[in-house]
Length: 81
Image (tube, rainbow, N blue to C red; front, top):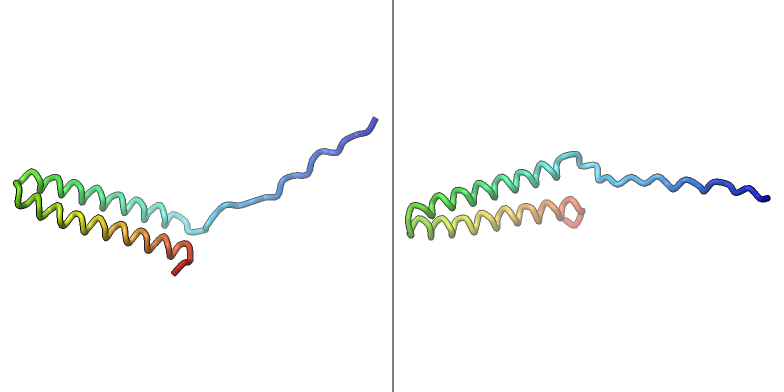
């Protein structure tokens, strides 16, 4: 009767990009700024038509700026820039 040897252990693999909490902190910062922008815009909308139009125009630009900062930071993290 032949005896079978146990299988070899799988290779150890680590999945880490060693950036600590900077990505999480940045994403939370983006969420906070987005939330504040939306809440301020909603408050200005309650003041009337003219403040609502101005607030929506400004909020659009602020939200796009927050998005672009995130895309630029993501490219830097991946080493594309």
